[in-house]
Length: 146
Image (cartoon, rainbow, N blue to C red; front, side, top):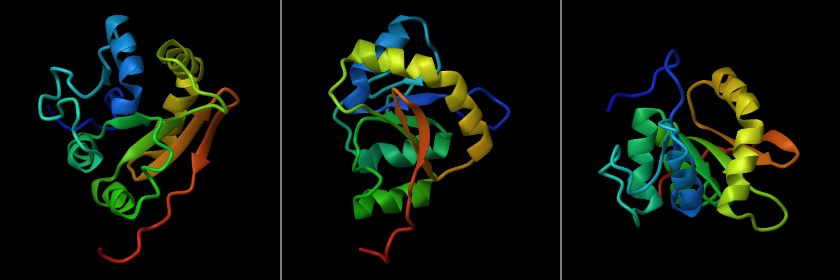
């Protein structure tokens, strides 16, 4: 699979903590949503560690959808954000959400998200999507090597 270019459509990668949402969107006919275990990314089976899927997702230009608040702040994963140009969207709310609620949130703000993706271009960058909208998240530069 080739890297996604700015001129082509966006491909989303729902990481394992949003697997239910990813599968629901796929079942609804979305071909632009992938997830661990999806046939289009055989190198990312279910259970793949973040540091193992991040290079694949970054090299292909996918936009990560996640509920993991800390993925962009853990030192090793933060370094991977910068090394692989990860572009991500954290989906969340004050209370836990079910997969159908995540789908509803994503669809409600998707048009705005697409504008943000176009505006921000290549990664690394991170956004937060909540019931109130979309906002940028700080993605600090990593400290030196581990």
